[in-house]
Length: 498
Ligand SMILES: Cc1cc2nc3c(=O)[nH]c(=O)nc-3n(C[C@H](O)[C@H](O)[C@H](O)COP(=O)(O)OP(=O)(O)OC[C@H]3O[C@@H](n4cnc5c(N)ncnc54)[C@H](O)[C@@H]3O)c2cc1C
Figure: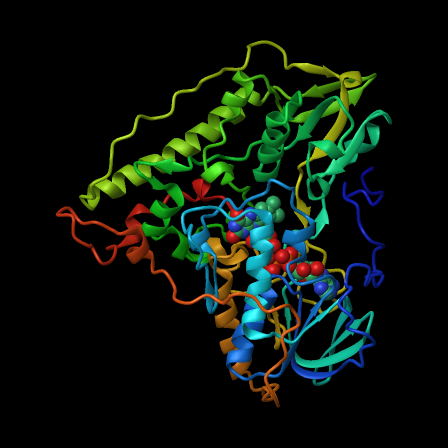
């Protein structure tokens, strides 16, 4: 595998062209499509598109959801075998379908997540057309035209819910690695057995890089990890999951617009932590102590030698400092509210990098490289002028300046949870309100309830309220019933991640 030839360092479809979508993985017999007109066309059948459909269905708004593969494709096809959620199950609260399993504080594994998404669809029967790729979106005199590989649709309004993690990003340095090395992107990694025997270089220490490095390490591989600047967060602190503390403190309700620089908040890397084995920290220093080799950022590959930056110590210190600062904020919250919580000793580094010039790696030792260098969105099929200079959609909570055009599922679209299971439903509800009230294209009532396209699955009943589930205690051990002025405990934006 190699990087693209367009100078962006990324593999990409041909610029300015309708890209060739396919039905290769559709397999659901949608057959030939006639296209047609709908009040709303939703593009993308992941959790965001389904959440949108849920709210439109509830309001009786005529719509169709176009999905180029199958519902839940990303979770099913682009996650490794041992993948599990990093966010606790109770945060899976798709509208009308909160997690209802036995482990609200656990972390669903990949196949369970796929089932959750499929069951969600089965619970209300969204009008999804699977195996249909939207290849061009353009504005018309009275709305939009969505061209697809199965016919053209017209719509009064369109919601783009195609996900933020579409195109794997691989730096072009990949092209300079010796040919004996197998290269793949994190989206294609499944498990250690798909790699040739030998040592593995993992590039990137975001969520995926850390978890894949650990997966390989636990499988007995010799792993070399090129570390970046992603922060980390502890899994548990003072008796609770840190996510539960932050939820209680109001962090997940904070709108992105309340930060000085919303775009910077949106661009930040996720904190690394894992839900594996019931959830635990990821401490790269402990990996190093146990035999993994850590390096700074990947700098070059020359004459069979891979070189790295001199930034390992700084990045490890930074990751720990972020994690400890979050604990500081939790301590302050606990003490301000007189909450009874067990004391917990603070983190002490278990390993330090050696001083001196950065380590080098003989490329002949390595048989595989896994690029955990992220993804980017691909909006080249959208010809409506709605993007900023960096190619990002211009929007306010998903509502663009082009009447009738919306985005859903963007990271930090409105809050931390917008690009996740926890917050996408609230954003979908917000958009449904806008869609229903827009006078440019009165919503057409659906003639009949849409038929489910996925096998029926178990529904879920009853949500789990935040305070109720966590059991907020006041100083006297009673239920505090709410949190006063959560803004007082907001963590510095630097610490929040994307
Ligand atoms: C490695 C990783 C770990 C994550 N872990 C968590 C976690 O622990 N908890 C959490 O809440 N979130 C997590 N997320 C974030 C988020 O929940 C997922 O990215 C989720 O898949 C986003 O859902 P979505 O519906 O917005 O987008 P997607 O799931 O990407 O769905 C978009 C859909 O649109 C379809 N599509 C795209 N283009 C077209 C087109 N032109 N025509 C038709 N269809 C199209 C795609 O096939 C896809 O099915 C994680 C993300 C990643 C990458």
